[in-house]
Image (cartoon, rainbow, N blue to C red; front, side, top):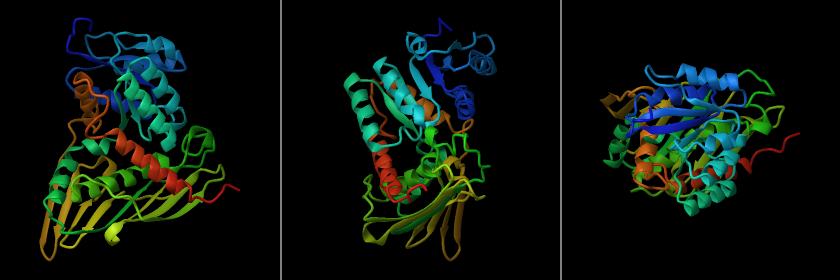
Length: 340
């Protein structure tokens, strides 16, 4: 590995479920290497490193202390996949150590903290990006072209869901307030991100702020949001209605309604590989745009390209977009009922 001058060396913080998808995707990105992993338990880190060791290469180094990981001069960037509650502390430490950062969504849980971290990244001249795969999926390139070309006419509304049935466990990260659990932060952020993306495609890159927001939220016994129904009202009568929750099964579709037709991600819009364009009375087009590997490779390639170009943010997932999403989630959460 030492002689691989074109290698881009990643460290993983939090080798859990989603970090396995990340490590798998490294194989699909030229130059990407797993160089180090931080785990509270050495055995867990060693198992992760062994699982993703490539033939002919040494396994990733395992650290159990953050300063040890960040002192590794060979690490080009860190990927943070811890519970949401810990994102801020790891981002801050990595930026202070001049390590580029890709952090799972949500970057943090308030706009104010996000602003402070982005200011730190800019002051240090260090790259920082929130990991939202939808911005880098091939199928969104197809859908974006249709929307920009006016294939559905004038935008009228959006409807979506992101739900899955999860067993209630007050200690699990989904349900635990100490780990920043809750449906909006965990999955509703995707409904909001794609809402913003559609508006940007239809309005030349700009996204208006909602004029009003209607919210209904059901809280779990731990006080986190188990399910949330939201309707965002935008200028011109455009709306985006969505439901996110841990209490229901859903196809997790996203539909965009226009004056001349509709565009639809029929299943799993957050990691979609299929998009449909329907223009009544008889025209329906369906395009499949599969992942190279698992959908994570686009954001990995983006980070590597941006870091090598000396950028502090991605033009496809800029800091302003992260702050806007955090602001919308702040506004929605402000309308939640108070925990009993």
